[in-house]
Length: 475
Image (tube, rainbow, N blue to C red; front, side, top):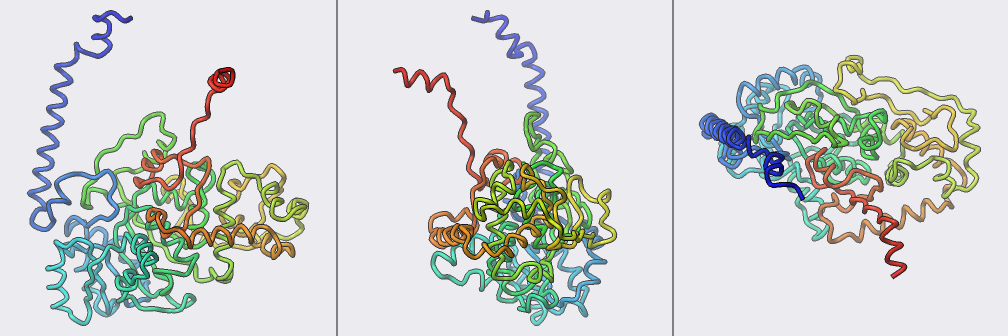
């Protein structure tokens, strides 16, 4: 039993007046900051975007004309080299960035404004009245495209088709069909882009849409990292994104240039994700990405679901070893992988200005993909997490070409998974039902900390102590 005087001392009662004063000063400063924010932006933005800072915002607005000018200067060389004549702006709001797009009259013949907030619709309709043939306005939440796709699946609706009505359609190997600009902080949105490419649905059913987005650093690092960062961050989503997309880092933009503003978040010292969360929290990364034009040469359209299942299934656990896992599907295949006489074709960087030292920490430059980028000196202890995305694609290509593939249990597992996904009717949070749980993955709390979204992976149950189990058996 601790004496009262010691317990009071431990609780810091002696410092109570100073703690109360500090708390009062902090509250006073927050109120002053909120008042300043309201007076500065209230003429253009609704109160719900100004009243409170958000820990994670799925969609964001460019705050003022000065911020739009800075972003436009970063976009200038990339917009100049774009070959498409249709640009889609997500949540234009007060149209600070839209004005710069209107100045490119000879380049962008069609500007589609997708707005999710009713407050801005009258202003956007006025802009449409001024440029009836050039500016098209639609109300809808493009960032929540994955939700709309799931709802369409449930009731055979046309929500996605209605939202994307103004976007042109082109063949996959042709030039990009549209350029999308915006600020997105939603991880399920990027998951939906991957699934859209794999299953030939939704957005990428219309063509190879190019995007230039401002995204939070943890999301971009997660999508573009290498296995050097550790398997807690380097997951199946990282591998799939880098195989499917060409990506390019442009610049970092201050987070304060976007609304709603971000609440301060300090990760705990014991957090496994501290090193990622502490990277440039006061910025957003301006990045550019588009599907690879030669994707269907690297992997045939009909084999894309098999590639998706192969990567998701084998990266379920960070401890999965290559040869033991593949021998479950094709018994005796280990010696073929160990004794590999094929010549390896190394990958090369796609962009000369994307040197590693110029990129955010842990992110990798976009490279070519190869179906003959073999992992050197593979053995029975080599893990799937040791492979780069290109090496993972090479391994799948080898596996696909084996004569036993057509009769392997892999295809039966794939078929069962696809049937289960078709039958999903009550999980709208699973991105159109396309998802596999991952063991040994980040818990829901850690995923919320990393990506600021609800975790899709199940939290592993703690192991029961042997002492208690012994006790219960004796009883």
